[in-house]
Length: 137
Image (cartoon, rainbow, N blue to C red; front, side, top):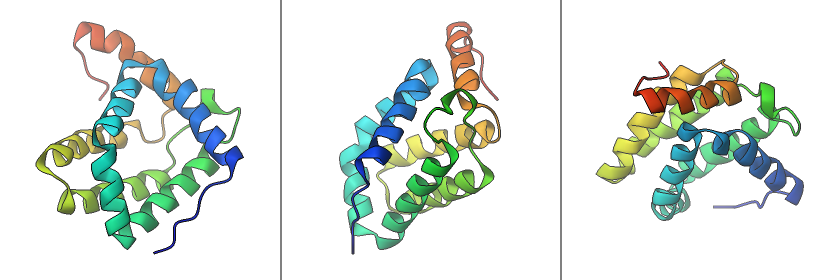
């Protein structure tokens, strides 16, 4: 199993997306917290499963393509990225703990509802929706 480290500029680009898109909304912050909660289990699963490692690498490559630096305001989940993410989540459901599996199921329905929409304004709309108890769907 070969693990390739990403160049520094790609890591910076991913961090910029996290800061400027995900962390500007209640829903995006919840995704980040979910990752933080399960990062040890996710890392273990990725390192134990070549298929999952390959999928995660493809997801990162597609995300880097879909979200070039400076495009955070208009970034959208492409059909290709959604398909890769769904494939990885399907795989995770077969190997994850019950707690991670529950989080994956919730995230999957969110990912499907976000496909093709501008992420930043859609996620930022969650700020008001979460205050009123409504949903994004």
